[in-house]
Amino acid sequence: MNQIVYKNFRKEEMEFHFQPRVAVPEYQRLSEERAKASAAAQKKLKGWLNIPYGNSPRQVVDIFPADKPTAPVQVYIHGGYWRSGNREDNCHMAEAFVNAGVTVVLLEYDLCPKVTVTDIVRQARAGIAWVYRNIARYGADPSRFFISGLSVGGHLVAMALAYDWENKEGLPHDMIKGAVAITGVYDLDPVFHISVNEEIRLTREVVQENSPMLHPPLPHTPLIIAVGGNEPHGWREMSADFYALCKSRGVDCQYLEIPGAHHYSMSALLGDPQSPLSRVMLTQMEL
Figure 1 (tube, rainbow, N blue to C red):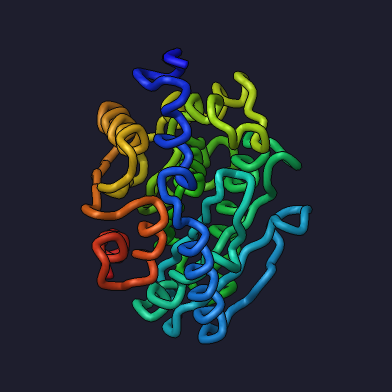
Figure 2: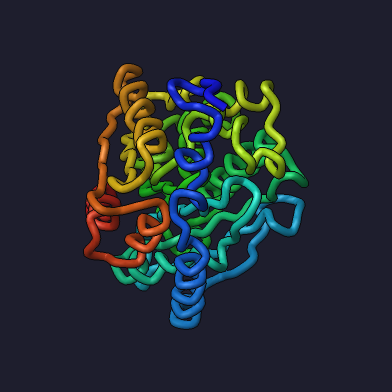
């Protein structure tokens, strides 16, 4: 049982450090509170729901427009370790950002094991491209285009920043004006060693193809890497390592560790416009 499987972590330590549901035992209650807050926000907001960007039922976006035209755009990608979660239970943050003058887009994707993480990365990139190409039709300004995501949403943000938008999609290389990766998964190797991989079904090939530590962002977009100060050491270290890598590659990058926050409370902070996490996101958008 003392086998080292990742860095200096033994097999029996991996679940605590890299499975947030283990590190935060009250996760179910906190998830239910987030879902209630999301339902309340959805009742207050006008918007366009279930707009397809791809072929499957989950390849859709919800758009919550700001009151003023030509608003900046914030595309938010939820977490769930690639095998759970949905946009309806993660739109709690939309009300605060819409009230601040932001058009918010919630991006949905298919889940493992029905699809692979490689498929999900491809879908997230396709959804981001669709929003950039079409958001002007919904009254927002694509020249003020930002993305963010929490947990594996942070992973998908990182993989979007590693993509060659210009050569692969014919889009401006700097179309994403700023990004925030929140308590993200930047190294897929530890996931290979924990129980969630029974559903995610990572292979060594998928790990190599989709680890931001192996495919860092291109230096076109300012990036904020945020993590909770009360998250396990292994999880915080992954964010710090990714920040160091991004800095070494010339990315305009900021590291934000929020004292007292853990994986699930980081999500709750997005619903508070005065929280340090919301403030840094709005400041990035010059709001």
